[in-house]
Length: 89
Image 1 (cartoon, rainbow, N blue to C red):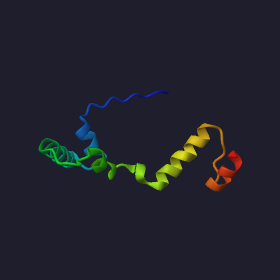
Image 2 (tube, rainbow, N blue to C red):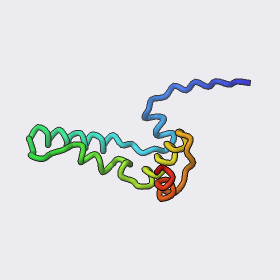
Image 3 (cartoon, rainbow, N blue to C red):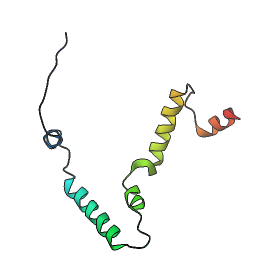
Image 4 (cartoon, helix red, strand yellow):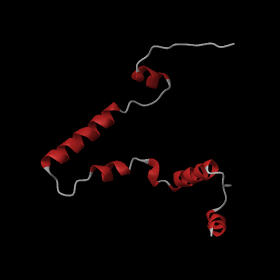
């Protein structure tokens, strides 16, 4: 048996249905701040540095999880890094 359900809703309606926060004001503020800094020509302004604080790439736990998934995809068994280093030599 196969059941299909079509729901017509805007992204905002879906976010509010699932209880996700509305981040539009934060996004607008970030874009305005970036625009002001870029137009005023602040020396040393780097948007990537500002955004990097909000990305999960800096998390060591995420890096370990990504390495585990990568090893699983490559057919290697997930082991501790010290064991992996000695096996790869």
